[in-house]
Image (cartoon, rainbow, N blue to C red; front, side, top):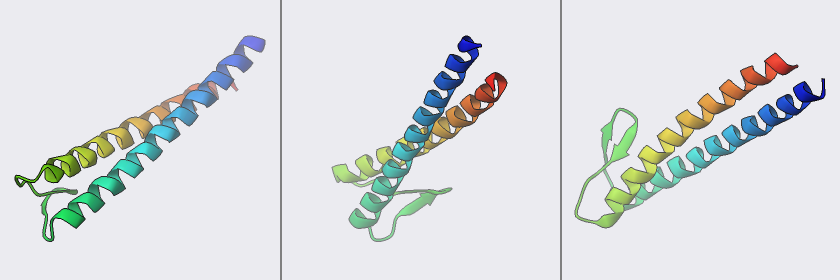
Length: 91
């Protein structure tokens, strides 16, 4: 019984890590979008990713922030859902 309690606690911790990764993705998304909006008045759009490639180094920096944000969001949400379902097995 103690083993199941420890596994549920570990899954709860891993679920919180997934939430933190999602939160980091949101911060990077806001940063990348704001950086794109500040440096370029009329950005180009690829689906929901704003970008504008110029010779200025901030344009690549903003695009990197935005792409990294979407990756972190996807991974964080997937990890949170995965560990939530794992924890339900131990409860």
